[in-house]
Image 1 (cartoon, rainbow, N blue to C red):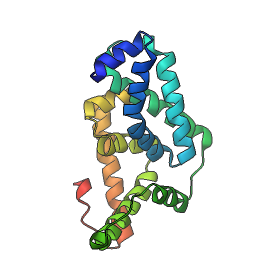
Image 2: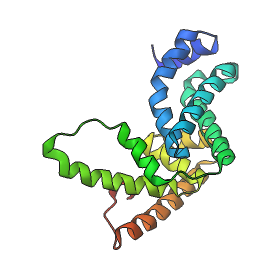
Image 3: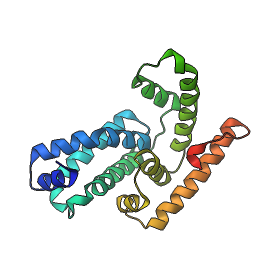
Image 4: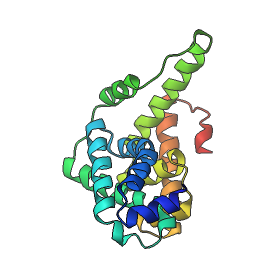
Length: 192
């Protein structure tokens, strides 16, 4: 069954369809919430509140084909609210330790590549965490969740030009932070 049909059935109160949507969206939603909030416990709360809000407000979903945009709009609003309420920054050491807990094993032949990649990912993650929350959200939705500018505009409730502006300025800030981190500049192809 496709996502639109699941959303249509969920809207009519079908719990099995809602559970199928939860199973499909939970991993990406948890990652997006974690990247926005920087705290694993908060990200679990954000995702749980988002699913509860989705089910309670299922009748407000006008177009079941636009479930993804509707879902991420609720998720980003919940994340922003929790970030504002918490007004705290988690030390980057805690964030990195939480990420390490979820990693799989590594083969011996790729250990050097893995170490270099992890160092770059850590630097990128730390830089993304320093962005203002709205720029951070747009960067996460665009690069990590692979959403289009149009979809992000619907999620954030803003114009496509605003999303493009936040992407541009966020990328510029990331480039500066990462060049400062590398003391001379590194070839960060993700930001090209």
